Image 1 (tube, helix red, strand yellow):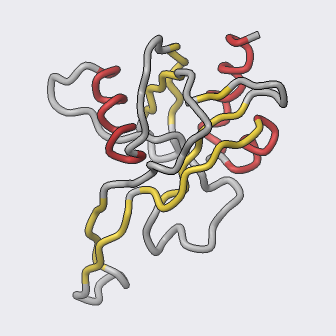
Image 2 (cartoon, rainbow, N blue to C red):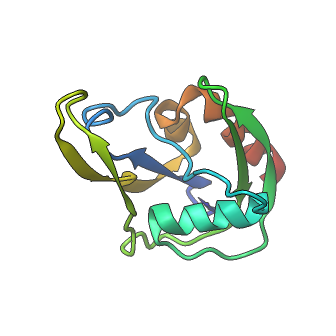
Length: 143
């Protein structure tokens, strides 16, 4: 999601929830994303995952961006759309994980614990490095 304005373009990033990401900030934020179900359309999956991770409204038109490959080898397909400034409805679904590892104890954590709009320069500092090309392409396409 992006928000144009007199102060410049801002983009929505989310901070991953859970104990692994606690205390990490720079180069840790991400675009809302998730897994594609069997036979699911990529854009439909992106919309579903955006709703699950943010609970924020989605509105077309959708601007396709070139997929990027994460260090894990997974590919992230992304679409941008113009959104608003109001993030008060932000809420994320949760997941369960064993923490600490091999402890036999499980905790429930939000997939994303924060959402924020960042100016492009700040977003480039905060986003996972493998996703930074998405910001560059978005800026270029909106010129």
